[in-house]
Image 1: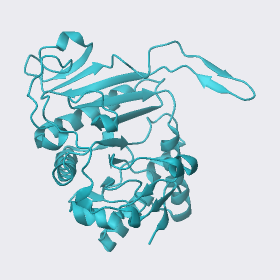
Image 2: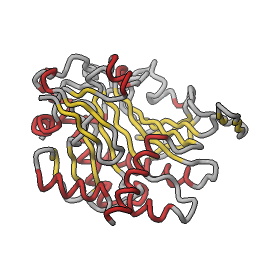
Image 3: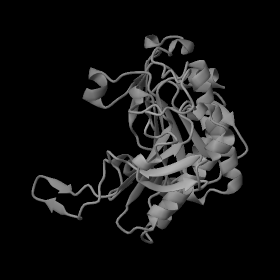
Length: 329
């Protein structure tokens, strides 16, 4: 039976429609096909040997045997332009100033699902440091980190990489999340993500991994088959406040979640992204820091939006999250 479900944070709706579903293991028709590739491809601009073709920001470790590099994006969505704004009675705009960086891991044929825990851990540490560094700039309002895997998920190159966009505005999706968390906190005195963690552990049916420091769930109002949330059990509003022990466990859990998708769904296209609080700029963020809870969303790109989704903004998900969680455990 179909069911409309509401995201308890943003209040956005999804339609769970299991009558449109295939069996979980049949959602494998658009595999990225990472197998069979060489570790180094001379024609790939991200591969070792082509370092001079990019404007490098940093590499770890230093020298020829780097494992992670940070470079400027040659085809940036944001650019270094003078700040300008315009507003009239109908339209508002501002210049697209900001930073657009790419984080590259070394091996061409090693998607995140197949990387070592140590490589994933080192990447998470780079995320943390870049957020800290970029947050120091007064013109940056938000820092978004994400990963595209496969062309159907927006990746123009198969070489594993992540992107960082530091924007002069707080994106609307983040604003909706923060506002929903804030209203819940004012009404209940508690963080809605912390309450979701307690509820999901009690109910058990949508839990994928219950770790020491992290809980992985198929969210109640999943927008897509096999969508997963990675939630820290300890309340933290900002990812950059994460400790060494948490990073170690998070690296393992992220690798396991992506590995399950890789193995059970034959390497599907996917995105994952980090949502964290904007840089602290004013005292009014104190309440929001108590109410907001950073998290990672893993979003396989298996279904395609059509007329209903675009017309209403309501995704149709043919895979109930309870079924997805059971499949991914």
